[in-house]
Image (cartoon, rainbow, N blue to C red; front, side, top):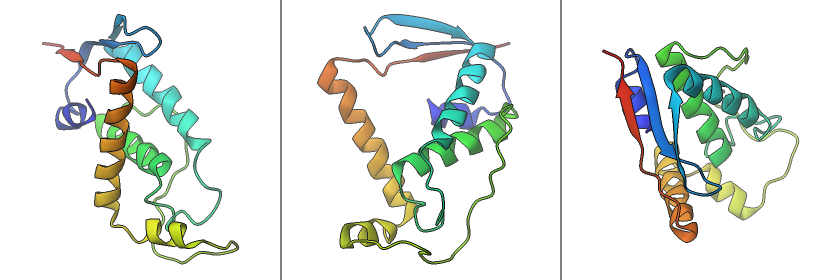
Length: 140
């Protein structure tokens, strides 16, 4: 859905139809309600960001989700949540130690890490019989 929303960032959404996680029942949201929910989701994702060393942790799934949603909402002009976010540039690890697995994960190109995270997320619904199918109705 994110790719379709990003490709149509200037268009208004009439509604979006998808399936609830709890019982896989279909649900429909208005376009306005979708953007409200995504603003709350953006606020929620802030809780999972590291306190420091953002440049080092750019590959973390929580950071990828936050950054992609923030960028999507900016492009669509729908970010109402007041979040002071400036992408980190360069810099090394400050004030903490990193094990080998952590070091390796910080050296994977961000694009590769994003694709791995997306693939991982699509495996979970299959395990619980949840449909990721959706449809967007665009306003005329």
